[in-house]
Image 1 (cartoon, helix red, strand yellow):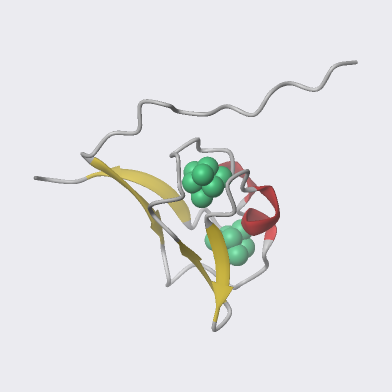
Image 2 (cartoon, rainbow, N blue to C red):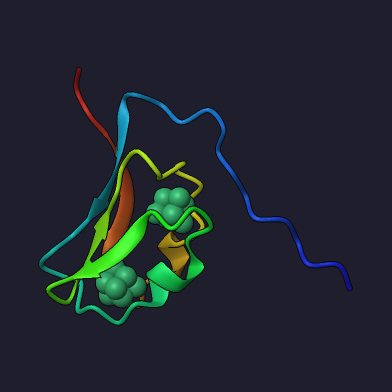
Length: 76
Ligand code: SF4
Ligand code: SF4
C-alpha cells in the first residue's frame, strides 16, 4: 500500500496564524514528531512554532490529544 502524501497548504494565508494554546499543551511532543518542516519545537515543556517554517499544512493538528493546536484567522 502506498502511503498517502502529506497534505501541504501551498496557499498559506497572511490572514491566518498557527496557534499553540499554552493553557492546554503539556509537552508530550506528538506534534513535533509529525511536522514535515520541523517548524515545531519544545521549549520549557511547551510546543512552540517557528511561523516562518510552518506551511499551515494542518498535519500536526489532529495529533494533539488535548486539541491545543489550531490555525486561526487574524485581523490585518
Ligand atoms: S501545520 Fe503543523 S505540521 Fe504543518 S507545518 Fe505547521 S507546525 Fe508543521
Ligand atoms: S501534541 Fe499537543 S500537548 Fe503534545 S506537545 Fe504538541 S501541542 Fe503540546
